[in-house]
Length: 339
Image 1 (cartoon, helix red, strand yellow):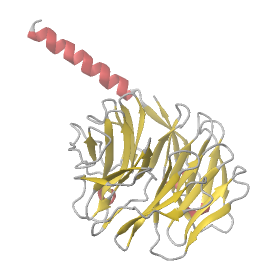
Image 2 (image 1 turned 180 degrees about the vertical axis):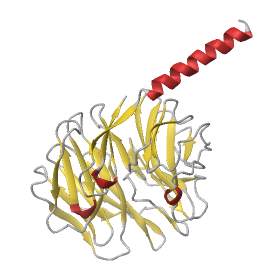
Image 3 (image 1 turned 120 degrees about the vertical axis):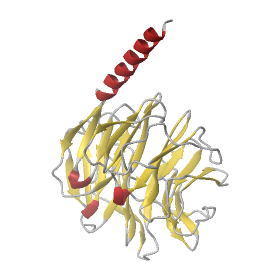
Image 4 (image 1 turned 90 degrees about the horizontal axis):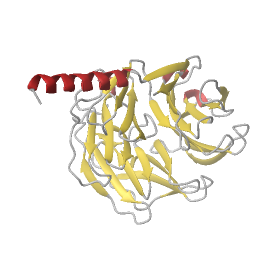
């Protein structure tokens, strides 16, 4: 094939790829609630829950188009930074700050039962995830050199501190930015950290033994590091950066070729355009990432990213059972990803 023909073919392919990526959009559906949303759980293509500051909870039954809001009585000062929902009736929320509380509802938020309460300011909860409806984990900032890991085996009714939690390095911690610095993936649990150092920590759920890999997204600043991790069959994608300088696109994503920690990773060929607080695996080779700098999409397992929306969001999540993808952020902002 002639060189000119090859160049034309490559140009057409590039233009087609660019057009396909530009077709991806985020539709803003709500920006009227005075709450900063960082907790988001999408159950299916209809049911979704969000949690935020000032004790606010939102529930949608129509795929995120409209929302019913409530401010939980007695918790008006709580910042609920993560939520795990199992249906339109059952959900668990956790707060960051003091007191550290975990609440559960079985009736769609009409009533909430307190399942955990720590008034000690050393307890600061960052993220929550579940292996199944009964078995879940919550990560918190390190206490006495150990990452705080809470575990439940009864659907969130009781929580205990996991004895085999990993050691924390000096000034290392998690970011309570989107509830995704902790992920339970199949039979393993993974944590990403930042601050003094950034690492990916991974262990089997039923045989706790931690492996660690350094993630080069931090320079020792308290505002910088790895904020979120997501997995596909081809490996893990980690995003973060510096939330105090969110337009800086240097060192905001890192890739590991396999899910297990301990492997050598690499930076993307084209990084997301600025700080990202959350990354979510969608399907195939597609990952979505978002942050205060905007939303970015990769169709090749995180190697190249294209910015598809410039609005600020904190979190993006895909439906556990379905294809709905939602985003949420400050000012009660909620968006729907349109592929």
